[in-house]
Image (spheres, rainbow, N blue to C red):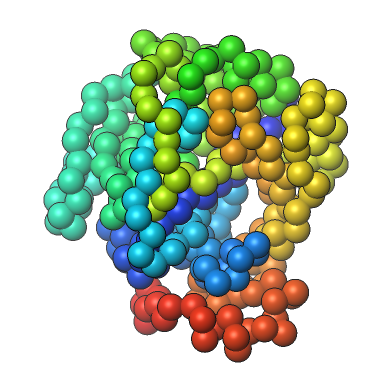
Length: 316
C-alpha cells in the first residue's frame, strides 16, 4: 500500500443551526471544539472543527452550518455513514449516554467483526460508533472532557460511500490512492490505507437501488484523505491530473493545504496535508476558544463577526 495516503484526515458535512451542532458534538459525543473559524470560500458561514485534544489529523469532524437550511437526503454519490472509533469496552457506556441525551440509536450488529451502534446527529446525518478492541490503552491525546478519557471517541474509524458502480471507484482507490481491498460483506467492500486499522478504512457500498443523494443539512460535503507533506500532495495531484481527473490547484487552508476532485461515483474527495496543524494560530490549551480568521479576512473581522450568528462556546 502507498504511504502517500496513510489514513483519513477529516470529514466535512453541512449542518443547520450552529449552536445545536456545537451542543451535540461537544455535549452528547464529548468531542473538543478545536477550531472556530469561517468557511474560507464563504465567510458568511462558520466552519466548526471537532477532534481530539490537539485536533490531530484523523480525528477531525468539521461542519459548515447554515441556519434554516432544509435537510438533504443521503443516497448514491455520497458518503452515507460516518463512523467513529471507541473502545470496545465502552459501548454500554455509550448506549446509556445516548439515552441520557435522548439520542435515538440502534444496535446494528457486527461489521467485519466489530460491533456497530448507529445513530443520527440533530440534522439527520448518519453516524456510527464502532467498538474497537485495544483502544482502551490508546489515550495519549484523548480529550478528557465531559466524557471520561477511557470511554471517549478516539478518532475517525471509517466512512461508508454509496456508489452506483464499484469498478471505477475501486480502480481510483487502489491504483491511484494506493489502498487495498481488504474484505467484503454483502454489498459492502472495505479498502484499507497504509496506516491500517481504525482511521484508515473506507467502505464502498455498490450495486444498490438507493436513490441519488440530495444536498442539504445532514449531508457530507466531502471526505479528506491524509498525505504527509506538500511533496506527497503534489505527487498525488500530478498522478490525478495525468488520469484526467479534474483536480484543483493547491488551496491554502492555514491548518493544512488541500486539493479537491470528484471520484467516479460522485463523492467529493480532498487530499489534505498533515501540517501545519490546529495550533498554528492558538495554543493547544486555547483551541476553539475564539473566532480565528485566515490572514486575508482579518481586515474584515468586524463585518464578519457582525454577520455571523452568536454562539455559546463549551465552558462559556
